[in-house]
Image 1 (cartoon, rainbow, N blue to C red):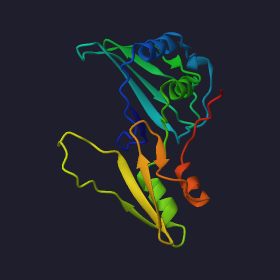
Image 2: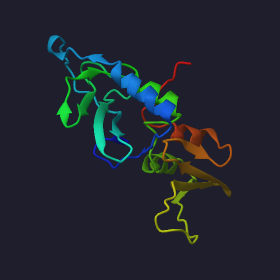
Image 3: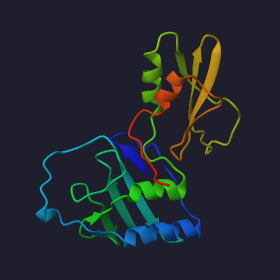
Image 4: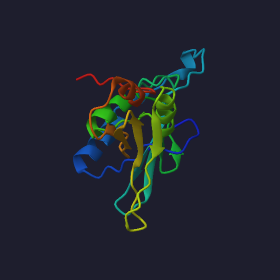
Length: 194
């Protein structure tokens, strides 16, 4: 789960594939201690998401959870913004996550800091001639079924549908103009070294 500030979570991913779960556990187990006592953190940075990882048993029981504040918005964890791990209700010493968020991004093919619909809407609305609307799904569906958020952006009788997937990916139904593409890249971004 990923959230920016006190807003509702905007990325929610369930990982059940054994390889991916094992890889995430291995990444967490390999983190070193954050020796924050010997480091001065002068500024209080903000801008990126706070990512929460929950580890559950097969029966759904919560075994552990980790909170990773990405205060700089670059996908990095340092002694000044350490990972806080809690196992069976007991907090461990703070850990340095280093590039943990970028590794999760790459492993799971997700975006933990996507632009939000309201950000895209305000960005596009600033441009003369754009009309942006939320999409309402009216098809008869099971009440429990949820659709990802969608917007339509219209300019000069051309229309694009923007979909905000639960994995954090934001897609257009077809290639759009540069102004629209810039709005979809708004917010903190992670650069994946490949």
